[in-house]
Image (cartoon, rainbow, N blue to C red; front, top):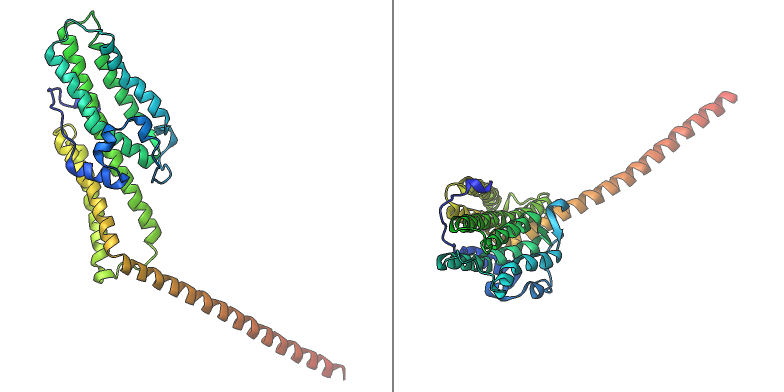
Length: 304
């Protein structure tokens, strides 16, 4: 969805979905406020509990480079304020709106960005471009040759870019969840999981997967209609995948039994195949020897 599809009305800064806060904290093993309050340098020094990156390389920057790029972008406004470079057309309302944008970055964008970078082990270029655009529009508000309408326009564009960043970030969160589940299905699909709880377990897994996909598609449809509803639906889609993994955890003992059953059957079939192969070889050798003996005797009798 392009920026012009997002409502042009002034949008209040939204508080991050509480469920998403808990999800980020749980998956990364960090308190959400620790992420908000830590510098990027400190965050990127932390150990990574992640899998390898699983998306095309041209979508990402190598993890760590974003630290320098983002700090450079985020520092633009601080430099302007430190040097007292202030446009006389910048009103108190404008200042509050800009402060609100920074608050939104700190409370919502930063934790989402860190979550995505930790999970992918790379940084999506689209998010970096969005952050760059946000603070480019803010910096324009401090030019001394612009009027109030120009400032209003650029603040609105900065907000719209943040909306786009958050929507993309929620999609990336769902993408990591969906990838983990697809990986689990590929690994466990060969086991007889359909008989767990008389088939209820596998039915729940498949139905929940379908529900997650429906929620995700509904969230995308809501992007241009109700942004807050879209955020909530993206979160629900991600949570639905988490619910599947919780059920998998609850049924772990039955899944282990299914694994052992599969291995037992596999080993039994291999042993039976090995024995049958040996017996076949012995039988073939015996029959071959019997036939050769008869032929030799028959030729010997002919010579007499």
